[in-house]
Structure formats: C-alpha cells, structure tokens
Length: 383
Image (cartoon, rainbow, N blue to C red; front, side, top):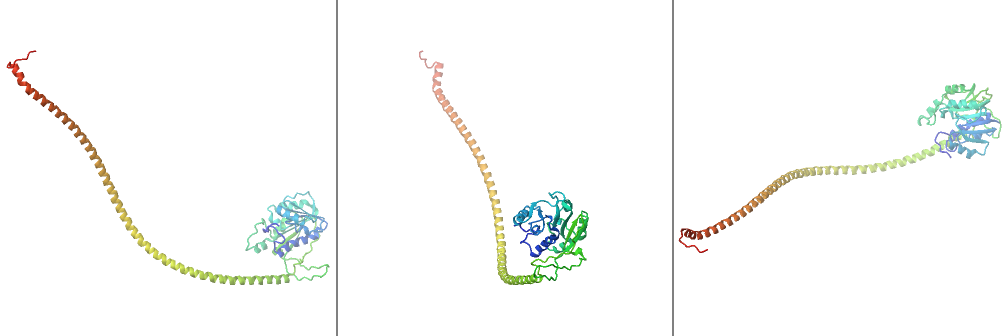
C-alpha cells in the first residue's frame, strides 16, 4: 500500500470523516455516470473509480506509478481500467468520454488551464466534467497550525473558480460541499428519500466547491446528500467523547508519571547542586593552590633563567679559555720547534768548535816544529 503523504487520499490510512468527504463526490457523480463512458482524472488508488458501478466503462488515470499499481491490484477485477497519464495531456481521442471526474486535482496542477482545455476536448458535446476543489479561504484557515499544503500549486476562492471554469465551458453549475449536521429520518428498509436543502446563500464560505461543466445545458442540478454507514453524528460524538476521556485518562496518568519524574529529577538536581557546590569549593581551593604553585614555579623559572644565564656565561668563558689554550699550545709548539732548531744549531756549532779546538791543538803542536824547520834549527828529513 502506498505511504500516506498528504498528497492523495489512501483508504485505511486517513480519518474516516476525511475519506467520506472524498467518497461522497463519487456518490454524487453516480447520477451522471449511468451507462456512461467515464474518465476518472487523478484517480489515485482507484477507490472512487470502483464506486461508479453503473457506468458503461471507467478509465482511471494518475501520474503516480505507485498509485496506479495499487489501483490495479485493488480494483483490477472491476469494469475500471487504470493507466499512468497526466491530466494536462490526456492520451485520448476527441469526444471519447461522457463524463470526467476530477475531484481535488485541479489545485495540484501548475497546468490547470491545460487540464480544463483537455477535458473539453475529450468530452462529447453533451458530456459533463465534474470538478471539485477546496475553498482557499477555509482551507487556509483550517491549516493555520500545519501551514500550507506543500502539494497544492494553486488554490481557488469561489469567484476565481467559477470564472476559470466559465472561460472554458459555456455551461457551469456549482454546488457547495460542507460536512454539515442534519436530522436524518432513514427508513429501515430500502425506499425513496426526500431532501430539504435550501440554496446556499454564502457559497464563498463553503468547505469545498464542486462544479458540473459542459458544452450543453446541465439537466440535473438538484441538491445531494449522502449518509454513509458511519454517518451517525451523535454516535460518533459519543465515541469521540469516550476516546477523548480515554485519552484524558492516559494524559492524567502521563501527567502523574511526569510529576513523579519531575520530583525525581528535582531531587537529582538538588543532589547535583550539592555536588556542584562541593566541586566549586574544591575548585576554589585548587585555584588557591594553583596560584601558590604558579608563584613557586615563577620563582623557580626565574632561578632557572639566572642559572641558564650563568651557565651560558660560563660556557662562553670556557670557550674563550679553550681558544686561549689552543693559542698557547700553538705558540708552545712553535717555540719548541724553535728551541729544537736552535739546539741542533748549537750542537752543530759545538761540534765545529770542538773540531777547531782539535785543529788548533794540532796546529799548536806542529807550529814550533815548522818554525824551527823554517829557521833551520831542525834538519829536514830526507825525502
């Protein structure tokens, strides 16, 4: 079964009174559908087309694939047939139908003018279009809390609806549809009935409008009332009152539960408040301790900064000392090299002095002999 979204009526998923409002229109159409070829435009799930049992044939169309599938499943065994099509572009030949029903459809269409023109095209000259729509003023007021119907494209007041229909059809007759209270005398066996219904003197205040439109004069313009099996208003009211009393008892029980729950919540809140106050006291003490700790940390940070500065100065001094040691080391190496070189030079000089001394001693020994020989005091050895 299609989900009820508010776009179309789904039997079994809507309030019974709302469903009867829709079903009553098809009961109304029964006076026009006898032995007629009928097109139900915007048929939804097909419950209305199936009501027109006195028709020669019924064709239901809708743009919703889900709705058409449901209509075929529910009412495919009746004389009605269903197919997917748009009301603004009817896939039928001219003069194909005696009656078109378009109940609560026109307000859903951006192309509502095209729907009216297409309806005139496929109707026979004596054919009738039955079209209904909610009264814009009443519908807006009734949905004040819920807001506008998101599926309605264009809603009509009485004057606009009548004027729009008369632009397309030369003969238009309007009825108002209201879910009214009446006093009904119904025979216990089947029999004819009589309806006393004075003309509606304020059609612009009606709940819904229903119009018969044709290219020919409309013969049956009588008032119509339908008493559904569930139409006993007093019984419905008593049932409704009983339901309300049951709901009220449930609400009282719910209220008592809510009061108990509120008391429990209040008690829990008070406990939480106490815990919150203790937490605040603990937090205040903690904040004081944190302030003291922050003072200690600030002093330690200051000492650390001073020690870091001292360490950096010490590192700079150490670096300078290491540089000085490196310089002195280089100077010492240079001086040691000079000393070594000079020591070698002194040793070489000493060796030369020793050699000269030896030579001098030798010369001192040989010099007197040479002088004596020179003077001839010592004879020369023979060569």
